[in-house]
Length: 145
Figure 1 (cartoon, rainbow, N blue to C red):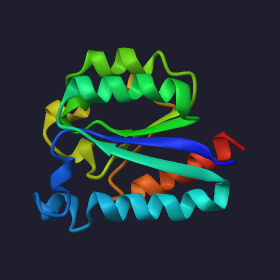
Figure 2: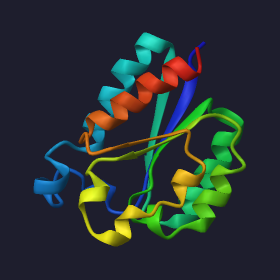
Figure 3: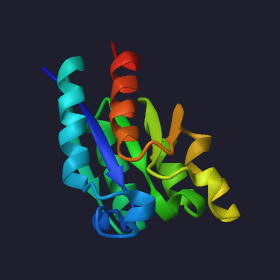
Figure 4: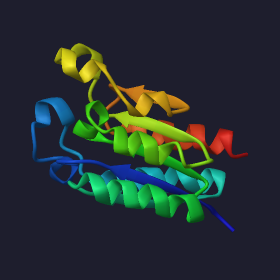
C-alpha cells in the first residue's frame, strides 16, 4: 500500500504556465503532478495535489492530511510570507513537511525572504523550477523509508 503525500499549492499557482513564465516557467500544475507521481512510484508514494487561492482551504487540507497523509509538500506562494494560520496548521501535522518555491525567492523582493512556513518545514527547496517538487518527493521517499 502506498503512502500518501499531499502536495499543497497556494494562491495564483492555478496560473502556473501562464503567469510570468520568465519567473515560473511554462510548466503547469498537471506537469508537477505527473512528475511527482513518477518519482513517487520509485518510493512507494502516492500523490494528492491540491491548489487553492483561499488560505482557509489550505488550512483545512492540512487538517485533512493529519489523518490521511504521511507527508506534506507545500508551496504556499504568497501565504509563505503572511500566514501564521498555515504555520499553526502545519504545526499540528506529525509527518515531514517540505516547503517548495519555484523561483529563487532570496533573489527577489525583500518581503519574499521571510517564510512563516520555514519555521515548521523539515526542508526548503527554492529556485529549481518545478523540479523542486520532484526533489521534495525524493526527500520524502528517503525520510519515510
